[in-house]
Image (cartoon, rainbow over all chains, first blue to last red; front, side):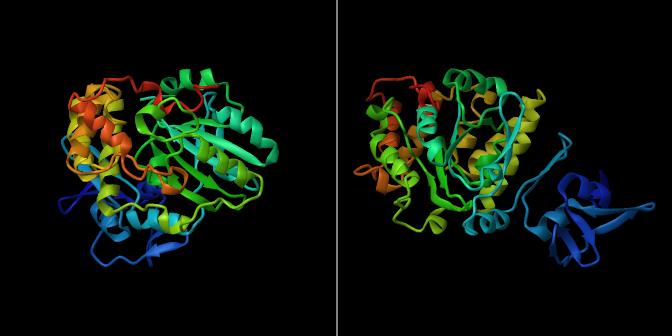
Length: 122
Length: 237
């Protein structure tokens, strides 16, 4: 973590490692989708390029929680990302474990009808 | 009951996938082991499903066709009668519709399944980010630091009971007792709905019966009951 003009910043490498977001000349890119950067979000510490987390969150429309006292930051999924996914009409894929730790994805069951049932023990 | 439906309908092309939104695998383990499921019975300790599908309560059901399209949006389907005396929702119509769909009839959904699938707001996604922050802190024994983020999540998304009820255990509250009744009672008493199913498979129950009942409990007008088993997927097997 770095300080960029009073804002919390991370290295470009960590931005990609943690969030899958690439800093490219054309903007901030998640896969094939790039968001143009309209504010100053970049800096450097020595030879390490860094970006402001606030700037990243604002650019791609994601919620960002920074708790300086707890030294914790969390960037969630954006409302527009989620909306576009659901409004496509296709069920978003997910991968979750069973009790034995075996991973299952919704997409494993393509070709079958699926009832997806979410519940809780609480 | 989901296990029984899966056994009955799997040969015809249906897979039931149950997902427990619980903070650890061991929280979900007794419920899953009791059901002896032969279908995928998964555990989501980060509540990812609630975020991705914009679920705000449990149980939540979706129907998905062979091509991965949502045929029935987020809904409340009870497939046994365990608590029908409380919430007034019955199993007959959802089960009949499910059997018909698997046998090749339409999903029977008379709305626009895509348009009716709820999508999250900016405020709701910020609530989920606070919830995730709180969850992480609480899981690292930093409950005092987590609490302000739980509070923020509650305030930003008061309609989301996967957050408000789903965080109660970590906050030292009882999600199946008076803390829960008080929370929902206040919510319903202020004129809000707790949980209303899509109308077509819950005929005559378009009002929020469950919420009204819980509000009565909160006001002392109804007998107190234990709701802890209400979300178990297969307890009636």
